[in-house]
Length: 64
Image (cartoon, rainbow, N blue to C red; front, side, top):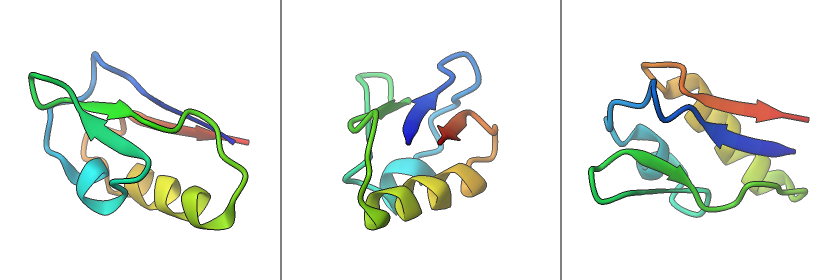
């Protein structure tokens, strides 16, 4: 699984790093950044997908 954030879409609401702090962090401007670009364990995948569906800008991509 690969996780990415579209930096042009991200507005820094922080839902991703609040829901999945092991997967996402934030930069100096408060925008989301991916800490774990690829993962195989079920917990990380579940958290990444949770953040994806809760992103108001739909800036997160989770691909198998």
